[in-house]
Length: 434
Ligand SMILES: NC(=O)C1=CN([C@@H]2O[C@H](COP(=O)(O)OP(=O)(O)OC[C@H]3O[C@@H](n4cnc5c(N)ncnc54)[C@H](O)[C@@H]3O)[C@@H](O)[C@H]2O)C=CC1
Ligand SMILES: O=C(O)CCC(=O)C(=O)O
Image (cartoon, rainbow, N blue to C red; front, top):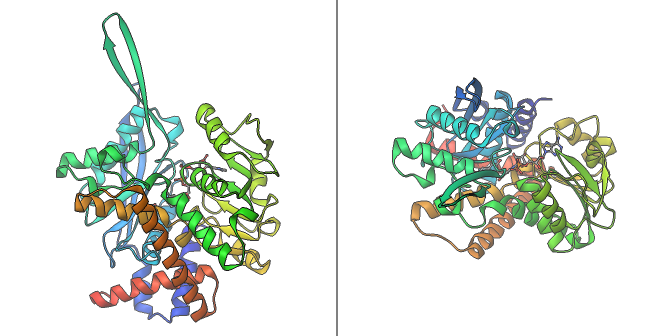
């Protein structure tokens, strides 16, 4: 089932549980605006290349629209539409004053040079700059816009030509900020997840992983268990996967398997995550890591473990593999990793699934803190950011549990009913339902 059909199905199920009026149900389902732009850039070899970019602005009843921008070869309008809708419910679940949006460009960022990526990002920003804005739509990082970009500074010193290399994880957001500011004046709050030197927030880089960690702790605690007694398998070792693994390893949780696009590794006694991070940083790959055995990447999702954390693509858990999943808990750090058919199979097996619109909401929550700091012109310290994040994650977990109790439903429907109800209420208060 495609991402949009799956998201719509979950929304309709929640609308039924809440007994929403059909007019308001329809108005919440249809996105406010769908933008499609062609971005043509000169490649480094002088040839021209065109890429299609999307920004879907789903809903703004609760505030400016908010959501990441993804660079991936599989980006398509339906998927961006689904991800934008998920952002609306996610912001509402987290109780932050935003609506939902998402963007993407159909490209393989690993095939583009740094200067080609910069040109592409700037052209995309030129095409959408009048439709985004501090109080309108605030982009952020997502898959492929988090990765390290290496910038080379050439510094000429007499008798010596020295090359200095600088790398940044937040470079894509810095380019968007710079390009947008050419049209509208310096506007740090137009984008979040940007470098600290340009007004980024301390703690934003780790925030989604830290939020996943707090969410996991809350769920396991509710079941009388703790992270330190559990075995984890993690799919994806980018921004979200790597930080999640680091936090889990930090409190004694055993990460027994990790995969990314380059391969997969396993160790039943637990992988040394700091060593794996160092290996990845040096080689850009999980291959040839000495502290674990190589395994087939396709086996990661069905690997022997207590807790499975997908941190990469959508739709990875489906009717083909759901019956073989060994984990008792699934924490959805990725967006829509579980399609509805898999959801049904896993639920019948008694697997507890913590849904994406709660589990990965740490990223957008700290994006909100970043936006607030930019608007206030006052920077928080990292301890304040992390303490506030914990408070938000705990509060929404309890709010979701209350919905589950009230409607006798799964955690996914608890989160969906919580989010949809808050957006429906804001819509009614504004008088938009007609
Ligand atoms: N970055 C953020 O703040 C947030 C991200 N998310 C979601 O988390 C997921 C991951 O995002 P990021 O970590 O930011 O992206 P990223 O680009 O930093 O990392 C993605 C990771 O997935 C791996 N990957 C790609 N295809 C794979 C495959 N077929 N098998 C195994 N691994 C594969 C990549 O190698 C990389 O390690 C996405 O679903 C994203 O929408 C959700 C909330 C916030
Ligand atoms: O940080 C943000 O504003 C949005 C992050 C995002 O795209 C997501 O939660 O899926």
